[in-house]
Amino acid sequence: MEEMNNGMHNVPQGKRKLGFWLGFAAGLFVMLLLGAAISCFVVFSLLRDYGTLDYNAAGTQGEITVENMNAAPNPADLDYDRIDSKIRLLQKVINKNYLFDEDPEAVENSIYAGMMEGLGDPYSIYYTEEEYKKLTEDSSGTYSGIGALLQQNPETGICTIIKVFKGSPAEEAGLKNEDILFKVDGNEITGQDLDYFVTTYIRGEEGTDVEITVLRGDKLEEITMKVTRRSIDVPTVEYEMKENDTGYIQISEFELVTEEQFKEAVEALQAQGMKRLIIDLRNNPGGIVQTCVEMLDYMLPDGLLVYTAGRNGVGEKYYSDDGHEVNIPTVLLVNGNSASCSEIFAGAYKDFGRARLIGTQTFGKGIVQFVIPLGDGSAVKVTTQHYYTPNGFDLHGTGIAPDVEIKPEEGDALNGEHDAQLEKAMELLKKQ
Image (cartoon, rainbow, N blue to C red):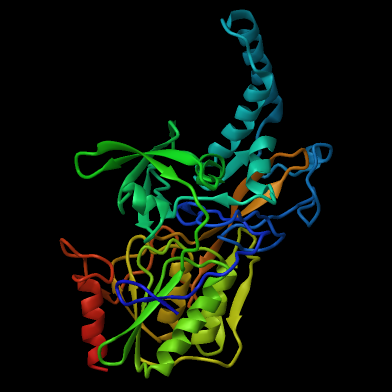
C-alpha cells in the first residue's frame, strides 16, 4: 500500500473498465474525468443513477423510432392539433418578419429540448444526435481530466468544486474546494447539463490545456487559470488506523473499483486490530448503485438494502445475501454534499441499526434517471424512479438527518488537524 503524507493509505485504483458512463449523478454530481474515458449506457443498469431503457409504443422493452413514435400513448393529454397549428403560425411569423437566416435544425431541437424543460425537472433532458454521440462515444484513445469533483445545485444550476484531489492537475493549477466553477474555455457552465458539458469541454487528450474560470470566496473573485489534462489514478478509498483501535475509511465516490478498494481497506484495518470503525461519506456525490449495494452486502447482515419504485410502483429491490458482515461499533460521517449512493449507504446502515450518523443533513438526491434512445440518433434522459431505504423512507428532496448534528467549525478540514465532526465520532466510539 502507498502511504500518503497524512498517514492515510491509498487503495490502488487499477484500470477502469470501458463500457460505463461517468455521469453526475447527485444533484448532478460529476467527476471531472480523472482517468481514462468511460463510455456508457448499459440496458436496465443503474450506473451513476443512470441507465438506458428502450420502450415500444406499448411501454414494454423495444426501441422507440421516428416511425412508431406516433403510436405512443399521450399521458399528458397535450392538444397536438392546437400545438401543431401554433407552431405553423409561428413559422409564418418567422418567415415573414425574422431579420436573420433561420437554422431549421436548431429550431427543431429547441422544440424538443423545451418539451423536456417544461417538465420542471432539472434531471430530465433532451440530447441531440451530436450530443448523444459525445456521451456514448467509445474511443480507443486516452482521455484525461483535471482531478476534481464537481457538484451542481439543481435549483440554481451553480456548480461548485467539492473536492480537489491531491497531486492532481487541478491542485497544481491552484483550484480549491468550494470554488464556484464559472467558465470552461470561455463557456459558461452554470445551468448546463454536466454530463454533456464535462464530455465536451473538460475531458480531453493528455497534455492539452483547458482554461478554467472560478469565482472564489465571499467576494466572488473571478480567477482564471490553465489546467493541463493528464491521465491519473485517484483512489476512491483512503484509510488509516486512529487511536483506540479505531479504523477510519474515507470514500470519495462509488466507482467500479471502489468495492474492491473498500474491502481491502476493511481487511487491512482488521489485520491491524480494528475494534471500531468510522466511515466518512462527507462530500461523496454518489456513483454506481451496484457498487454501493455490494459494499453494503459485505458489511451488513442479510436483508433488504434499498429499493426503487416508479409511477406504476414497479422497481428494483437490492438485498444483502452473502452471509458476511462486519459487526463492530460504527459511525458514519455525512454532510450536505453526501448524496445519492452515499445516502443509500447511510440509509441502509441507519435502518439496520448498525451505525450512528454524525454531521449535517445529507443532500437529498433520491431519484433515478434512465437514458432512452429515440431511434433517430437523439435521446432523452428521464427521471423514472425514487429510491427508498429499507424502512420505506423516501429521502429525495429531504435527505437523511444525522443522529448527532455537528456543524463544521471555522478552520475545519476533513480529516485534518481540526475536524469537529470527526472528533465527535472518535469521542462517541471511545465510549463503546
